[in-house]
Length: 214
Image (cartoon, rainbow, N blue to C red):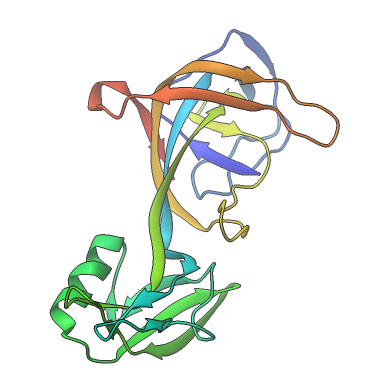
């Protein structure tokens, strides 16, 4: 289940709200507060709480050998939060650090299963002369969803299943993001044992922003 925050309300039906708390850290919908029931399709851009390791990869080193620098050390689902004691929030920061590192061993501080651990990785020199850790990483994701309700205080909830990484299968730890207008291209009806699916398009323009996700 995930909860988002936005700055505008949509929907047509008012009802009494249950005592539902916004777990993302924004204002909560209080018992007895009136909310507007929605169903509006929304485009969601989410930022992970650190750089997510999506998978461990094998590289061709400068000698043509297949090497896996992070094997048995890093794990899919790790959130890289520091490299050599430098806090990182995006994969571009990680790339810049590796570009300037020139092959030296790097110390990573990561969040794994809710706990902070540290480990070191030795980059491999690849065929093009660059040094890489053999990690597939990401720092954001996008999708189509449905807004469930909007509260009188400006909060809203999008209630549903947890947001999981498609490759590691782990629930994502999120730091925030942005809500956009979205258009629906296809609707897949849900069946027993198989959830439905919305396919659509999102325009990532400032004029299409609906609110901020916290």
